[in-house]
Amino acid sequence: MPFKVLVYSRFPKAMTVRIGERFELMDAAGRPPGEVFTAEQLSGIRAMITAGGTPLGAAMMDMMPKLGAIVCYGTGYDGVDLAAAAQRKIAVGHSPAANASAVADLAVTLMLAVTRRLLPADNYVRSGNWSAAKPSPLMRPQPGNPGRRVGVYGMGEIGRKIASRLAAFETEVAYFSRSKHDLPYQYLPSLEALAEWCNVLMIAVRAGVDTHHAVDAGILQKLGKDGYIVNISRGSVIDQAALVVALAGEQIAGAGLDVYEKEPHAPDALTAFPNVVLTPHVGGHTIESHTGMQSCVIANLEAFFAGQPLPHAVRGA
Image (cartoon, rainbow, N blue to C red; front, side):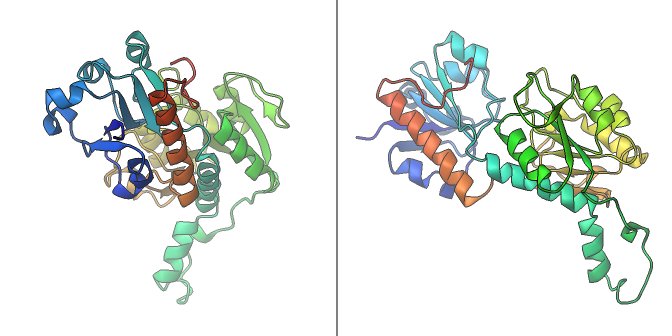
C-alpha cells in the first residue's frame, strides 16, 4: 500500500500526477485540511506537500502529530515556519535550482519587454496608430543593451543564471548578496550601492524577514528616473505601495513584475501603467521546470519514507 501524503496547497491536477503514481495523495485543494479531512485522518499523516509561499505555521503542524516531513514544490519555502518545524523535528525539503533556468529566462524577457517598450509597441500596431502615422511619445528610441548596467540582488542559482544571460547581451553586470562569490561580476557592498550603480535592478533574492521591503522608496530613488526594476523573486521584497508612488511620479522608468505582495493580483493602480510589464507568477512554469520540481518532491518523499535524510533539504531547517 502506498504511503499517504497530504497535499496542502492548491495545485493543478497535472502537477501532481507523477507524484500520485507513487504515493496516495490526500488533496485538500487549498482548503484548510481540517475542513476536508477528519482529525483521525490527519493524525496519521507523516508527510505533506506544499507550495513554498503558502503560510504553514505551528498550529497546522500540530494538527498532524505524526508529521515528519514538509516538502515544498518549488525552490521557495518562505511560508513555512522553519523554527516550528525544527522544534517538532520535522524535516523540510524543497526543489533547489529545478526551475532556475526558466525563471532566469523570464527575468531577461521582462527586462527586454519593459526597456524596449514591447507592450506599447504591440498596442501601437494593433490600434492602427502605426498605419495612420500617428506619433507616439512611447515610440521614441530608448537606450539599448550594450553598456547597460544591470544589478542583480541575490546571487544564488537563479541570480547566476540571470547574470550569465545578461552578459550575452553586452551588458555590465554587478551584484549584491549576503556573500561575495568567485564570479566574473563586480560585487558591490550594499543594495543601496547596487541601486545607485545600475540602470536595471534585478530582484533574485530569497524572501524572508531580512529581505521584506528591502526595495523601498529610498532604493527606488537611488535607482532613478532612468532606472528599471524587475522582480521574479517574491512580491514581499518590494514595497509595492512605494513602487506605485515612484511610477506615478516618474521617479523610475518602469518595471517588469512576475510576483506581487498579494497574489493573484487584481487590477489596480499598478496595472494601469503602460511602462509596467506584468506576468502571473509564471517564472518557473515550463514543462522542464515542473518535471524537475516533481522529481525533487518524489526524491524527498521516497527518502523520508525510507528513513533517510532528505536529498533536497532546506539548509538550516
